[in-house]
Image 1 (cartoon, rainbow, N blue to C red):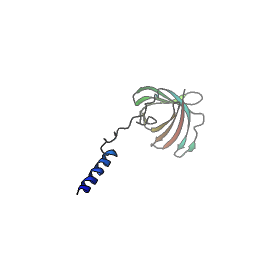
Image 2: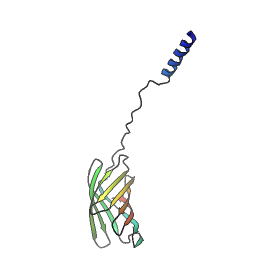
Image 3: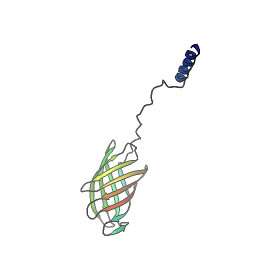
Image 4: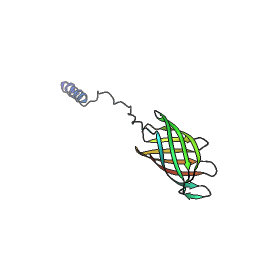
Amino acid sequence: MKRFVYALTILAIAVLACGCTTTAPSSQVASAAIPDLTGNWSGTMEGFIEEKGYTDYPGEAMTMRVTDQRGRIFSGEIVFSNQTATHEVKAFAGAINPDGRTFSIVEHGGGSSTGTLLSPGELELVYIERAVPFTIAIDTLKKS
């Protein structure tokens, strides 16, 4: 019987020494730093338009002007222009995901984008328009 009690005591000491009595690690994940998206982002577009097919939007330019940002929420306007004039301006608002790299945008009048911050000075948007004709586009923009 003494051997049994002795063996049980040694086992209990071993369990305690192995750290089985430590507290569980915190389940909170630290949020990534929030990037500053304010400023002008300009670049190229390529996509697909129903009934027209694939396009690189020849002669077109796109500028996303982020005019306000409060934490992870930002807003501004997207300007579409050609070589002679601005032909469309759309208000938008967006939200940065907790990872600090990806975000979502909704545009006034329809359409939405998911985005990825590729570097502090470059981002990519994937635009989706569900109206008729449906459209999908990839916009690669650099901060200017």
